[in-house]
Amino acid sequence: MRDLLAQAFGELKADRFRTLLSLLGVAIGIFSIVAALTLVDSLKTVVHEGFESYGGDLLFVDREPLEPDLNEDGVFRWWAYASRPPVSWREYKFLKDRGGAVTEDRAFGRIAYVGYGQDVVGVAGDWTLLVPQALSAGRGFTAAEVEEGAAVTLVGAEVDAQCGDPLWIDGARYEVIGVFEKAGAGTVSPVDVDRVQLVPYRTMRGAVLRSSILLSDADEARIRGLMRACRRIRPGEPDDFALNRLSFLLDEMNDLFALVSRIGWMIGLFSLLVGGIGMANMLYVSVEERRTQIGICRALGAPRRVIVGQFLGESAMLSLLGGLSGIALAGLAILAVKGWNVMQATSGPGGSLPLGLSLRATLSGLGISLVIGLLSGVAPARSAARLAPVEAMAAK
Image 1 (tube, rainbow, N blue to C red):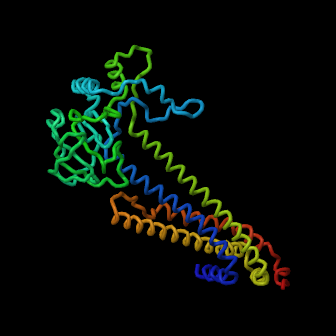
Image 2: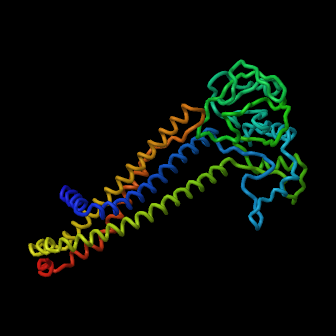
Image 3: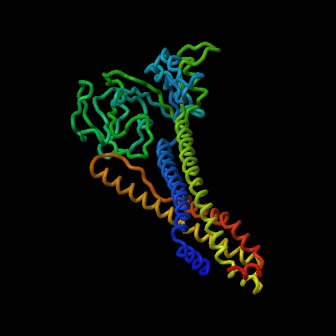
């Protein structure tokens, strides 16, 4: 190992410009791959933790599906849903009454009705289904406050209000009874938790832009049957409502993560290809410069596998140096991003993505650089091993 390192550094010193160009290609490639894997791993951790905060796969009864419904021209068919009736309070009560009667397997255990305004959101039932975020101060709604429509509100961390303060919403006076913790980048929620003003639905005065029914641990087939019965949809007629799963958003995010990974790999592999070709050329030149040395080794009885192993070891060591440089660049970039996030946090509110070099990204970078080094050294190593001792020693 020591000899290989010494020889690798000797090659680096022998032709610094040529070697540095080869290592630069490897470093850029490994940086691209490690950066992409680090970003994806960090995003996956944050998003999955956000989804797990709900404790299950929520079912949303909405007017429109989450999955885009596109025509043959790729245009969203909004006109197919514009005439649908919005999800109503009466339907929420219908589902709640039918769900409460189930005692064997409980088709759904928790249910909430949500009406969305601008930043004002009215809730009924189990409001924690919508915002599971913990409170930094105060308390949450009681069941009586939600059912009776008390003039109380829960606000996000970026709303300029404290517990006990009066807050005027759509011309009505509310008392702030709780403030949610800062949501940050990892929060998964249908609403902006940091700016939300949560009120009992019965007290909403502004326009309701959208309404939904949220259900936990729900039997989708049974909910569809109850909704069709509530709306008196005849057999054979299509639904005029949509059942959306929260897991659909997670699947979409996983597809996005896969795309980011593929882009990083494509950029990285192209750079590695350039670096590998440069390293192979450098080793071919090294073989020509060391023909006499190779001939002496062969004349003294060194088998071909020793010559091959020597050049493969040198190429692997040089490639690993490039890989370590790429990983170091990725680490510096992460530190720079973290420093920027700290500056942004001190200048104003906002969440930041917790970045960090993952073990998967580091090992992948080292493994790929090692493979590139070995592949780049195969042809030059075999060329060196095929040299006849007499011809090699006769070379000037």
